[in-house]
Image (cartoon, rainbow, N blue to C red; front, side, top):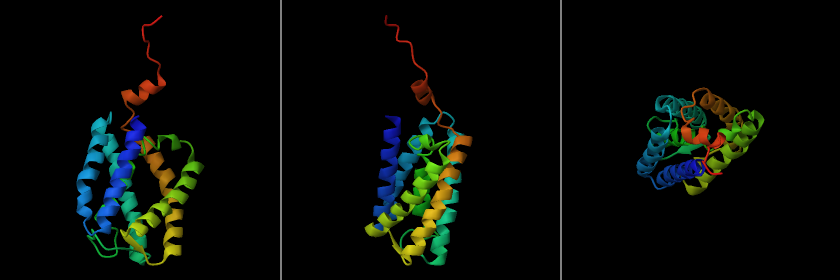
Length: 186
């Protein structure tokens, strides 16, 4: 159940960010992203460690997403803080995405090739969907999506490794799934 709630929470944050940016009101995503991230950190066994995971992932992802923006391959219209850089709502998306690393994407640990392949396929699909919804424009679609595919093939396994190293979620709930509890019944 915890994994499903985590996955749905991220999907809600993604949609709020993208739909808000599509209509020029990315700020509307703030309560959703805040709720998803706040809930995640509040439920973490070691909140500071988990917050470190979220911030590292958001920084890495936002830095990467500034590359295609600077190159002019991807154009953002809303939430711009610096010209030719990823907007703030992309950083919020990365922050929200990072909440999945130690919960719903935990299964990728040790499956580095699967993580790379998943990243290579799913990453570009998210940008294509964002463009279809009007949150961004793909000025050079082939180059932008190819770059996203390569970047996500590297970023997803790397972020899974970082999340594993600094895991702050490993909680009693996840531990209970692995350790049978005596019921006292005969």
